[in-house]
Length: 128
Image (cartoon, rainbow, N blue to C red; front, side):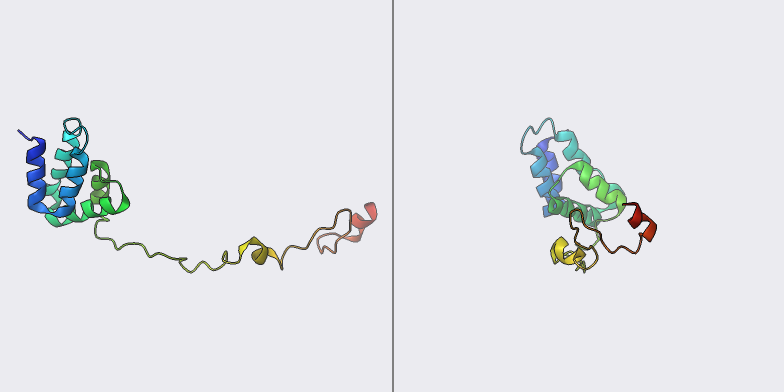
């Protein structure tokens, strides 16, 4: 029978990341989450040890060590993708705030005043 002890033993044979996922699943309400722990060990036959260990490591990194996350990572094939770069990613447009971004393109509005707008013609101005 595949008990929580069996799941922990199988996870220990493969790697630390999978052991950590199994331990977190079985930490609270072990009998209710036993099926999820068994399912984390299941893809070992289909995907192999290295991809499954990498998927478990990635699930821990994103903060959701569950069977659903591990399975999604394996199905998408993203277990070996590098970590995303941190930083602004070259987006320098918003570094100066909205005042610096729109200061040259938006004229200031004067209440009740007439603006020089190339979109208006003289007929519109006379109609006012």
